Length: 272
Image (cartoon, rainbow, N blue to C red):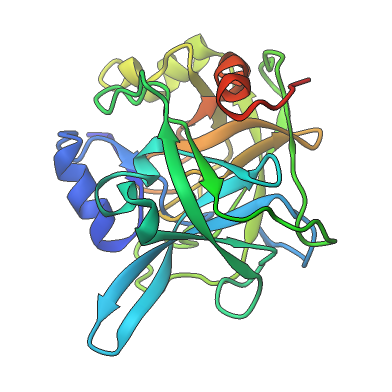
């Protein structure tokens, strides 16, 4: 039996899997790019790591939970399921920018507020998009800059790029620290539903953009919230995949083209 996976990391993944009442069917990509190539410093200056603060015996620590994308000096776009439970409090998360290695690179920013899409539906993963407003504006550099939004509908068969710090192997117990990227291809909704089967086709809606690549490659835990890019424009947000990672079955991304009006309304940004 196929199962859909919500791509979150560690304990948060287990907690959310229960609360989303998905019974092991859906998997959210707070995991890592399965396969793919290592990114160069500054190659994708718009990607960020959403980091969760955790109290330990040795004090407060942060760890990578999700990806996100810079769309302006103060606004980050990510997935709603990345901002649930402990992460629903802005004080509990940080945004790491300008990094390819989440341990040694980049600068950390605090989040002032989190705005989740009001129509988000955790059962069918509708409108899985969240905006984070940073406490201070970013400073542009070779490793930190925004990505433009793509307002037009994306056709099938388009070569796209997904980027993240997700797991590179399904059963890997070590969280990767280096950024990776992978080229994939878009599908239309009918083709996507046919490939994933009747049991899961309810997750393919007008807010979903499906992509596919061969077996052994795809998004995985830790990639959730990260960008799907075509022609240097943001077209999607990593949302879910079919377990196991790299199964060769399509994965789902939140479709930016149907959400640009909402993003504009909240952020005041112009879209193209």
